[in-house]
Image (cartoon, rainbow, N blue to C red):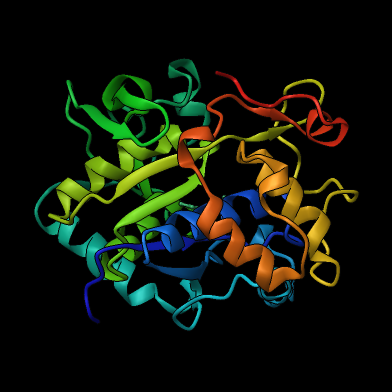
Length: 300
Ligand code: GLU
């Protein structure tokens, strides 16, 4: 596939209808791509069947379309890409960067779940496969919103699960393989994934893959400061009545509500691309209530 100067993406997991927090990530990643005159691709991250809701992926795509947010390439589904994850895992196993692990959750409980050495050498049938993270694996990257971010992956995360003991691919492996294979140059997503980025960068290095640019958008939180639960029934956004949620998402991105002007979705989106100012995006989590009652959401 042809390389792009800017290719962004939105990668929802089909665990339910598209909710407001996801809309902010979708709109923010779309705006960043469009203002750079770049491409925007949607990828369905359906690798965790126990958490998935039948029909949710199609419903999410329909809702996005109602918001005028349509992938520039046919939406790819991770469930159709097992062979690619297998090939990446085999490379890591062959060069000794990955190893099978039989440790159970309780084996790692004393270490707060952080795996540094295997504690259970009994061969169980269900083995996970982990990336070996050498001591001192400190990763630093520059996030477009948060600046320099540093994490000691060995100490804070430990050896990263790539294939789960239940046989499902871990998100960390799939996202790294797909971002590289799809030629994604810019990852714009929710700040809940900020602390996954260093381990994804380690994995990119282990697989000799390029590292995209990263921007982690503010989370939308409830009055107690907790991430809005994807299951909160009140929050799915309505693709048949997109303008109120689109305007709210615009405000969640720190933008001035008056700059969008009147009009339907198409006009609102093209206006949004012209008026969008990434330097206004807040770094702190945003209270959903504050967005509604009109108080300021800037953290500067
Ligand atoms: N599929 C992830 C989610 O819905 C997002 C992954 C990503 O953007 O890297 O939370």
